[in-house]
Image (tube, rainbow, N blue to C red):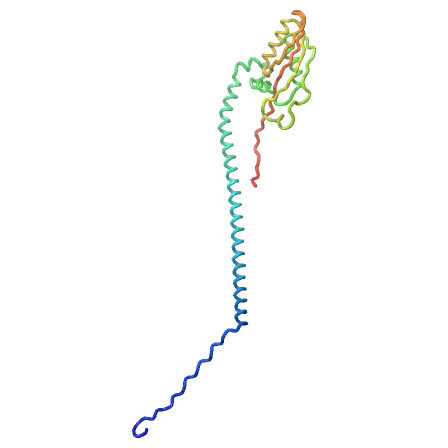
Length: 237
């Protein structure tokens, strides 16, 4: 104290803050390189994730398409079976009607044969030239007592390949020469028209007299390959 006045004490100066280090050119390049690496890593991760999502989506889409194809095939098979069951009832009724058909009974080859056998005889399921020639010689033409000079039947199919196996009527041409009286020739032609097997006469050439007539006849008959009904499996790819 001086003369009653307080003496001012000297104040300690506050410590000065250190200067913030400034970034040099080398530091900046290092930080840019680190940021570039980090960016590349994130881009690679994003690309991998996107590729994985795309591959997964494509796989799921293919599986969805396949499942739809399988379901559609199963539905089609179920519809076919249901339609077959429905049609079988009408088929049974038609067959029962044939069993009692009087017209079929009148053309039976053997009295003990069922009527339905006449249907099978009407349209053979195979190419049968030998059986046709035998039937003409021993059954059809023998009824009229004509003399059979010649019977010519095809030795091979006129239609080859898959078309020959289609379940549709196939033509088979044949010809024969008979001789006899006018009445016997006429009766032979009528007997041919009455056969249960469909025969269409395409041409007749007559030569001779009423008592000694010679007829050269060309005709067409048919056979129909059978249609099989089987249960099969189908692989859906």
